[in-house]
Length: 464
Ligand code: 5AD
Ligand code: SF4
Image 1 (tube, helix red, strand yellow):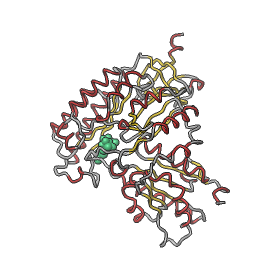
Image 2 (cartoon, rainbow, N blue to C red; image 1 turned 45 degrees about the horizontal axis):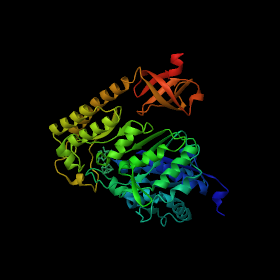
Image 3 (tube, rainbow, N blue to C red; image 1 turned 90 degrees about the horizontal axis):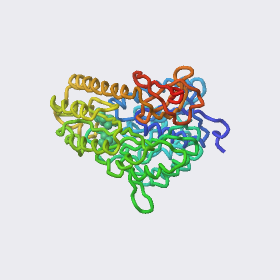
Image 4 (tube, rainbow, N blue to C red; image 1 turned 180 degrees about the vertical axis):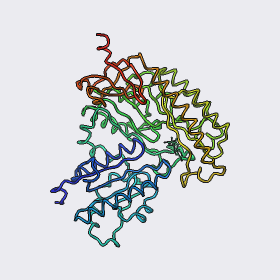
């Protein structure tokens, strides 16, 4: 018997970046639960702290090193008082810079990439066995392999007992990795090539979530619409998967993110036409509106193709709300290229968008390109782009006032007596109402707009 069975331990996971990381953090918690680790929200009481890192943002690794600096103080204090604190670095920074972290931050016990989460208990056992070693001999356990084995195969059993009490909405990873190799992006290097979970595994997990009370599932993947899960020897795409998920009793809403324009096939568009269950909100990044830049980015589509695709989607589902990602200041971006980006934004009309200044990622083709754009030009372009997008977002929210929307009420609101939830278009909605409303979809008449949310009242109450 191990001592962990006598003394429950506390696990704190700090999650950076995308929803995939949020999901992965849950997976890590699941993997460690049988080994006596219980999640805590309080870093100060943790026996094990895991940083689940993201490599997408600029200076990602520096941010990890400075967080590790702070944790080192906590670890030193803990040891001075006879206790201990173990530290692990997971996620994409760990994948990309595992050895560097182990070398530069000797207080770290484990460094491991996204393909290694199911081996976490073994790593922890190894790391624990080194705890009492002389510091000069201690070495972080590093696991940044991309295993041949199916990285999803370990999921269902591990998640069986933990899907309960995850609330009314849940993430479900169906796909990982990316084969697109956009020239600015590290994902194909840190997350590896595209892999899809078999259909039966996805349906099983979705059924378990529904049985545990989950009403809305968001399917996750770096390139989720490239999903091609195996089912009886053939590949099933995301569109067909959506129809299959729609049959699960209790499940009322489906979302998915993030999609690539090239993988938005007719079957998926047809699913949007046929299934009310599939929410009318689509995150479909275009990155730039200039064909020259799109080519340099290796996006594999033109601006006109993207616009034609949006038309097709809106024909199938006229109320589809669109969201996007944009990069300004990609190497070689001229004023005209940037204007083309503003034009495509105007042509589409986004409900929301994320925008970034281009920053080099070592190892990606973009990093070796000449004609990098000056920082002040990027700053100025980003501000102009964000101003345009903010006005579109505000307009989109304002267009909801007076309409009645189905809102999945998920929680108590910010103010006493209020509850909150989400519209089909992923907008946060607050309204006066009893907590009895939580857990179901209610018709809500939208009465006002706040900065990033809507206010409303129960439609039945309004009619009475
Ligand atoms: N520089 C700026 N933005 C980037 N993104 C990805 N890599 C970079 C980079 N090197 C943005 C893209 C992507 C989003 C998740 O992050 O817009 O869609
Ligand atoms: Fe990165 Fe492009 Fe793949 Fe998206 S599609 S993860 S931006 S390489």
